[in-house]
Image 1 (spheres, rainbow, N blue to C red):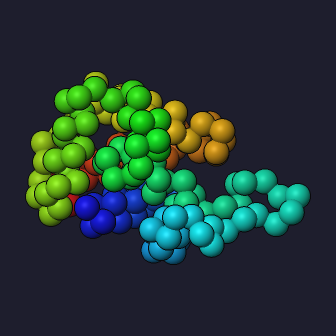
Image 2 (tube, rainbow, N blue to C red):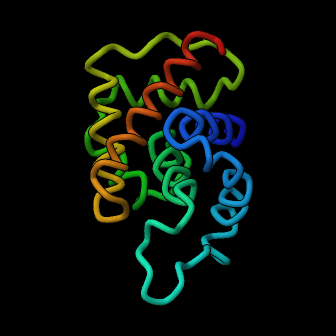
Image 3 (spheres, rainbow, N blue to C red):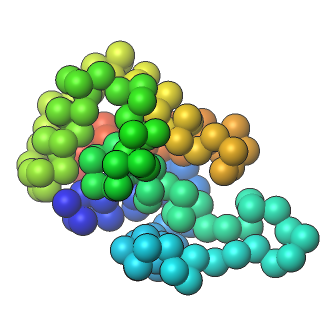
Length: 144
């Protein structure tokens, strides 16, 4: 399960914000540590200075059902049971090729990511990251 979270996080950022990919490992350590040591922007600076990986990882953990119930509930509000099952299948069988998401499932995932990032990053960034998640999931379904 950590493998899928790591791979999809890395692929999402590679597709959306290539300069942020190096932050994935450190963000995963912070996430596993319960948020301790999460970087904070300098006083007077906006949240856009935080590494985007710190936002992407919890959202993906929620989508894959890895996160706590509170986080997962918010992340999966827009998902149908069928989409949740497909994402769980991706999580439980790392390295296996899963079937592709339908256009409707991609829309659900997109909406879920945008909803989960609401108020954390700018709307344009949330949409860019949501598109990156879709791209990363497409790559996994193609066996890349």
